[in-house]
Every structure is written in structure tokens, then in C-alpha cells.
Length: 218
Length: 170
Image (cartoon, rainbow over all chains, first blue to last red; front, top):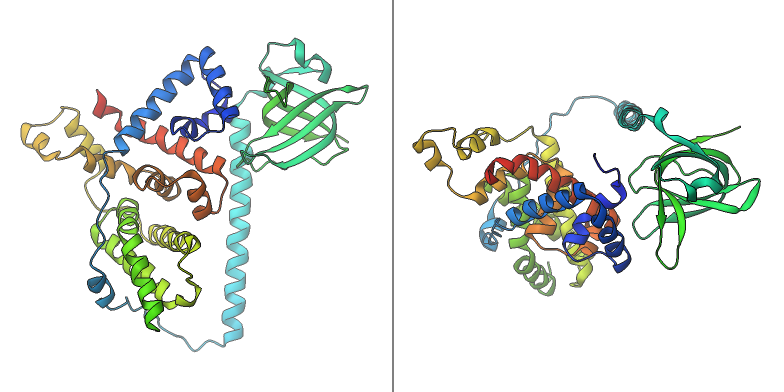
């Protein structure tokens, strides 16, 4: 079965290079004990890395030779167009390109997220029930009580609290690079994601990590 | 240009030109393009000589110019016109004549060709980390992203390279 711990897969290079913080190393090693797919993934990455070590560095070209070469001229044809029209055309082109990028980016991100997972198989739980489930794919509903900006790994965290039981909470983490917008404090949301327990001494809490989808409720 | 500045730039060239040449060669896939890149990067540095202070930040700034030059160059042109990687790996896989096998010269050439199959973003980060052996913090500073993003790109790049180069291991 494929492993869904994308949050750890992305840190494997840091781990392989011995550059991961000790907390991250401990998380990865705990996971590797139980996940044969990730052990194999790590071996494959190490093989690729060792092949890259075959690439020799190049020497610098001689300073005088490089600097003696004439810079490449970039001749352009100029047309008799008033500069204001040129500026308007350039602005229109930039606006069109930005709009196209924005549309493509969001369409792709949304379709990728929806395509990759069958959300109908996720199990709906109350925040307080998350400690009792073994099911990795969960849906949890609650109120956003805290948000924090970038963590040391570049992701976004928010804390989801049960409105009927303020002591029950789960920490939700959106991975770095995910275009998903973190919900605002005070909003009621439904969150889809992978449940896990973070046993590190300064955490010791249940998490939804990574968050795969967030729906803001009215 | 005042002599002191010229001397500093010459020193900078001596320190970085080889490494920038290496990055450009593996990112762009040809010696001619790599030499053009070195020239462009250092001409730009010469034109902005007043911004140099000879400290560590100058190196980061120079790397940024180099990475941007490579990315611009890759955007400008389509793929390389050299022999496709699949053909080369086909020879390496044993499905070819002895003459063709003989044509597979060095493993480093195959790996260098495999790099060209990666997107420019992944290619750059792989070369900076595994060829230039640049620390994660410095790569993050050059690319203007977090260490987590550097690792994430490396993870994708290593997985892709492993898939491309798998026939070499069998």
C-alpha cells in the first residue's frame, strides 16, 4: 500500500544528507520502523544521489578569454508606435498572462487534490474522538482557535477545537508549497487529512498532517 | 573601473567561475551555453560592480544571477537537440549491438543527460546540492525559498532521476 506521509517524504533528502534537525530525524526513523514502502523509497533516493556523485565539477574558463568575447548583441526592430500604446499593450499582456497563470494554478491545484484522494472513504469524527481512531483518513469539524505562520519546515499550522469541549483540540498542518489558504481564527471549518500523533516532548498532541482539504462552514 | 574593484571582481571570478561554469553546464547541457552563461553572469556583475562588497552576500548574489540566467535560458529555448536519453539507456540496457554499447562512454554522461529530463527548478537544486555540495541554508538563500522547499524539490528530483536511471542498475 502506498504511504501517504508526504510530510516525511519531502524531508528524506535532509535526512539522507544528515542535515535534518534531530526532531525531524527522530520522526523519520520512527516512521521507517513501520513503513517498508518508505524504507524502499529511501534506498532508491540514496541510489540516485550516489549516481549524482559521479558528475565531475568543471574548471573555470580562462578569465581573459571569457571577458574578451564581445557581449551578445540583442538587436531589436523598432516600430513607430507611440510609447503610451506600447505601455498599454505591455500592461494588457502582463495582466492576461497573470490571469492565465492564476487560473491554471488554481485549476491544477484543485483538480490534483481532488483527483488524488477518494474523500468519500474518509471517516468523520468529533475532535475528541481522534485519539481513539486507527483510521489514518479522517474528517474533523471544529472551530479554528489559533493559527501560526511558517514552522521551521515552511508549513502552516492551525489548531482546531471542539466547540462543545474546549479542552479537545487537534493541530492541523498544511504542507509548505500547498496553495491552500489557512482558515482564519474563529471560523468553523471541516478538515480532511491524515491523522497522527506527534510524540515529541514539546508537542504530544494529535495532528491532521497533512491537511488535504478545508471547507469553511457558514 | 577603479583598480581595487577590478581586483575584487577578478578575485570573485577566481572563486566562483568554475562553480558557476559547472552549474551552467549541467543545467543547460552544453559547453558552449555554459561558457556563455559564465560570460553573462560576470558581465552583469561587472556592470553592477558598486554592489560588490567582497563578503559572503556577494557570492549569494552571484549565484542568484547564475540561477536566473540558466532559468531564463531554459525558458527561451526548447529541449536540447542531442541524442534522447531513452536511446542511450536502451543501449545501456543491453538491447543493442556491441558498437552501440561501446558508444555509451561514461556513466557521468548518462547521469548528466538524465538531469536534462528534469524541470529547470529541480535540475538547478540538484546541481547546487549534489554537484556543488552547497549547504541547504545557502541553497535556500540563493533560491529565495525555505529549507523545507529545497528538500522537497530534491525529493522530487531524486525520485524522478531514480526512475529514469533504473535501467542502469538492472
